Amino acid sequence: MLDLSRLELEEIATALEDQTDYEHRWLIDPQTGEIMVWTTDGGIDGQTPVDLEALDLVGIDPLPSYVWYQDMVDFAEGISDAAAGRRLARAIQGKGAFRRFKNELHEEYPHLLPAWHAFRDVRARRRAVEWLVDNSLVDDETGERFVAEHPDPHLP
Image (cartoon, rainbow, N blue to C red):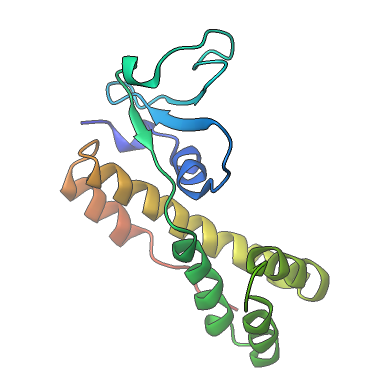
């Protein structure tokens, strides 16, 4: 089992959120917890192509986009400014929701950006820990304790 305190949860969260279709994979070394990016033409060192199957690493597959979309829904519903909540909820309807949500926050509600980042980051770190538990890299008790100790922050 890996030591949760020594892992880069933000990097794991980034891997879980990465929806790009490029020829790359995020990987974690199950012995050390080191995160690497493998590409078809550069392997894991950026220079030496290597077959992914030849590596003794665990692939970090992205979570479906609806998981991350739900964060925007919950944030829009959770803020106390009803008008801002309605506008953010409208912004996330249909294709391009992530970009419109971000634009709406930056352009109309920049004062909500710190709250959004704190909200999104806590959820992303919890998902990273849950992924580690699901892949038997961190024990259940450690994962449950982390999740319990990192609830959603209070929204303005």
